Image (cartoon, rainbow, N blue to C red; front, side):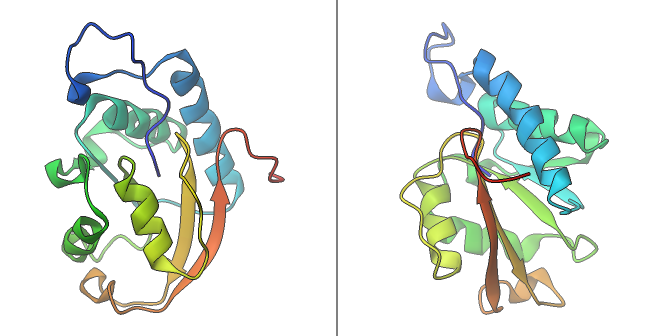
Length: 160
């Protein structure tokens, strides 16, 4: 998942601390509800610690009835390259069978495009690129057979 729409008007002064804007605060809970409607149950939420990704994960957690303390923040997800995801995912707890990862472009789009034969030009803000994979441990993620499930984003006309 890419973080929701952020504000460029922030006086924070640096990219890491950019907050969500009004649309982002509205889109994140809506996309979480659409994820729930899709039938995907999330066991683990993993996020970049950047303010906009963190807030997106928090809004998803609220809709998923999860506690803020359950979100795992991984600094390497801030502006991660596609390869970074393949280095991070094997460290996930094997007790989680479904994981939501909140990160940033362009790395998240590159990563999504590396997973299956399904290609997208860009992951818009608050978009979800979902796959299934048949593995018994996250350590097997890189070589596991991945199958595209769906791609959804706030302005999508996908049926829900």
